[in-house]
Length: 134
Image 1 (cartoon, rainbow, N blue to C red):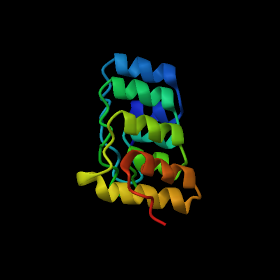
Image 2 (spheres, one colour):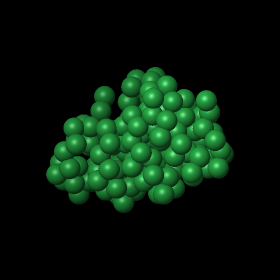
Image 3 (tube, one colour):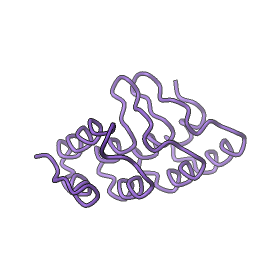
């Protein structure tokens, strides 16, 4: 089940996102087990860059774990949906593509390429020095 903040993010309701954050909403509330996402993961998937910026400024965890069933990290969701501006934003804000996040890095590339978003996959090369998987 999504939190009110997650629902507001998913619908792109910037005004409600601000109201909820000002009222103390948990910016890092975990993703629902099935097909869930944190507020930032949902913003990344939907391509709401302004909302993503507000969430990061409010302390959102860029590297939060995805929901257990069909979940995506913020990077995976942005890559799968070809959100190049979001990928750049997340990487500039400190999203990890190495170390413990390596499996998510590989999944993000796979999602981007399988959805025909080659430009999104190539963003990884720019930031990591690793060529995208083909």
